[in-house]
Length: 446
Image (cartoon, rainbow, N blue to C red; front, side, top):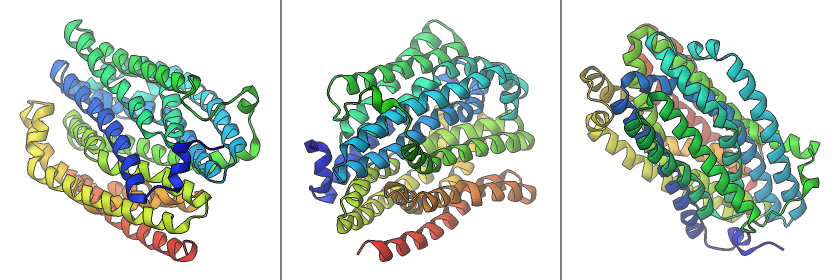
């Protein structure tokens, strides 16, 4: 029998459900984003601007490996939400067991060669010149903790799929708070430099893993798996893979974007331009937290009700998610436009970086009020298990549109061409997503 938390996804008013799911998700993302943001501020002020660039070089590598866990988590959680909605508890249990096994196999398989070939990987992602040595120190330590981060990302999505957003929020808060405390101790007090930043990050992953393990072993979860559920099941693996490929492809594209941006900007402006991008990238992670929270909150609601064939509730969840997220996007846009220079001064006192970053940041955030529609639209197809449209729409923004733009426009407009590529990609991908989402709603949600 379903527990109250998951069953309520098909019963409570959509507005209350969306707020109830989105607020804890937003808080969790906020704290996690603040962790990344403050971590960057600490590193920039206690170690130096080059350290910010070094971390920016390492992030796409470590996050791509960790994103294997997120991909498996989101792909499997879509199955779990729909299985709980259809009252198919056995499929939900098998899916969760397979998620754990698959995450361990893939992440460990990626970390080992990642450590062996680090001297080649780091320069490829922009770790050149003065950036290489601090990037190598950070990279080596952080990669040891990446499998635990992957398990945390996977487990967090499953917790949310069960309809327990508060526990998912706490799982995101623990490593963030832990990392900031350890940053202060290891960098500021013990003067460990880049090694201190790296060990603080890795230890925070372990804290998060310990909490998620406790959640599933203590009886808080309704998914009580046994040994048999860990055995890989081919049909379930295919379904996880097809849906998870959307998230993995998105993160792969993000890593490619980092690679291209770091190399293009290094040629145009050296270490300074990479630092400018690093600051803007942190703001993208931080400022969009409420929009991403609505997107995360929307997923289990849409998936559960679609599985239960309550299509009017699905339709209402789409409309409200777009309304809430676009309103929040407009507020974020206004904040960036008015306070860009003040934001940059928090990260560094380097006058060159302060002079260059605000204009670039305003360009990057120019289409924020409408990009929420693109995120919700792509998430909807993933929630209902339609992997191909979810895959294509997810890749449309940064893959199919942004990458060609950022390869072409800088040849004519220099660094300005790099920054203008962001809002153009957001605009075109939003138009495409709106068309396909509307067509799907008219065809299936009657």
